[in-house]
Figure: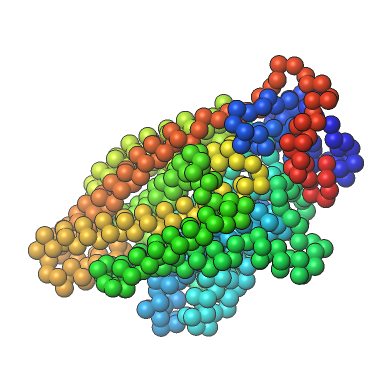
Length: 595
């Protein structure tokens, strides 16, 4: 058994489990490693993750600092996606750039989506904490450029750079947590990160509106700088255990780093993947807005993107799983591809669709202000956060994650069906109660990440996390576009069926959800417009119902793996540990040295 005395004496908050020890602290606040000898897992791929007898983990104050830092980073990531929404009108006025309105959000999303797989390769090749800090620095630089922008083009460039920075934040957060705590404890920790992080989506428009009204829109971006500084400061006080194949860049010569970048990061694959992803996302963004869906521009983008993606997949097959950004053999594992589907449905579809269209319902149909619409969706957000935390605790205690995914899908399907009955006269009790039920989606937030960690070795997790995060991002773009098509076509049809002229219909649509009461001047017209909005939004919620069913079905394929340590019937003799040491070679590294 490896000698741990010297490797831990300088940092009492990083501990190494002893397979022969008698007891283990139970409290969540004092997360430690399993003290029991693990029985061999049935699936060979699980061996590296489930045999924790030689792992180095964090506990105490340093673990809390890590959780606080990565939670704040994920919160800022999601906040930055939505805070600009209410600032865009003032930005377009200052820069006289109404034609660029779509690029302020798209530039951020496109660059983030394009760099997510590359970020997975970066975390595989370099140590997690310094890599995470580098992504934070890029995010901060992009935010600073946005705040200092003196032209629309400069703002778009800053948003693109910020998107590159955020492409590695969620992956880095999950990767460091997987290094810092044992598998059994991860559902709770990741649930806290994802649950609290999603508050950024809700608070973004509220903060953006308040900042723009009482100060300047530039603080929508400057606000990231001190917060990101706090993240870096917190991380500077802790050492994160490093496992797997991560390599440190500290002390290496520049030419060695360059060689590693060229040989490990699949740069040719990235140069094919990035334009393929951007072309397809541009086609979705342009369709029905800048260009008709049947225009040559949109059709060319929607065909060219997938065609180039096929070429990219052929290249990835030739690369092999060790160097590929999209390892096809990894994706073929049932738990991996079903987890990608589940993540796409719950984060990329259910969260995004209802986060966008519930406020529209309250503004257009109920006639409340944007600020009040944000308050009205609080039951949904609070319920989701609570469900994420509760499911994390119970998954850690009971050992299984599939029931929470399946149950979340079933409850979300019921809730989406109930929410689709919303109308102009829906009472408070119903729209509050139905939103609370819809918050059951939170129970599934972290489970796809946990499922992947059950079947893959530690050195594969950064790439697997990147696949999952890309599925969420890509799914969000696709399903949000689908929802927008359903909403726009339904609203146009219903307004035309009420007898409004084409010019009048266009005027009502351009007024937006918060402006229909200014263009619909008579009580009759307002009633017709409100009803058309209500019916169209209800049809969007049918899309939410469909993806909830998809979440329910995909959850069954994520594997019934027990997260709890498996105790052997007796204590293994000391000589038996040699095999475990051999199996765990390369995984006993902690920050600062070898165990």
